[in-house]
Length: 120
Image 1: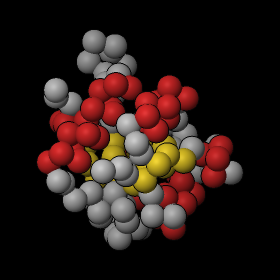
Image 2: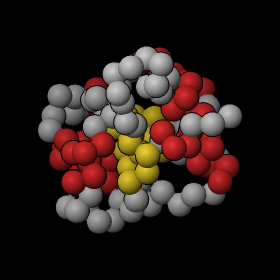
Image 3: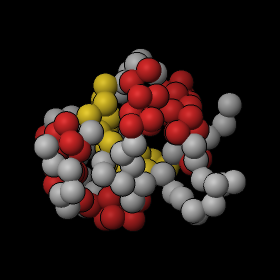
């Protein structure tokens, strides 16, 4: 199964996008959407309007935005401690998404932390 994922500004990285695409996901970046550098609400509105799950490393702001968009395809958040020993690698992120898919978790209208799905 593949997901439609919009990677917002704070989560965007070429390597992550390549890994997600290699895993079979349809991925759109802020530059591809023409909204790089815009406010979080613009990213959320784009993801919702285009039926993309939003992937972000800005969990607090997007959890708050969920109130403005109660119906959405899903928000995947990544918590960081700025500690390379604990922070998720790009491979961890892709694996966490695969674990969610394998578990059959419905992501719609939910904010889901990928950190708790980081296992092999």
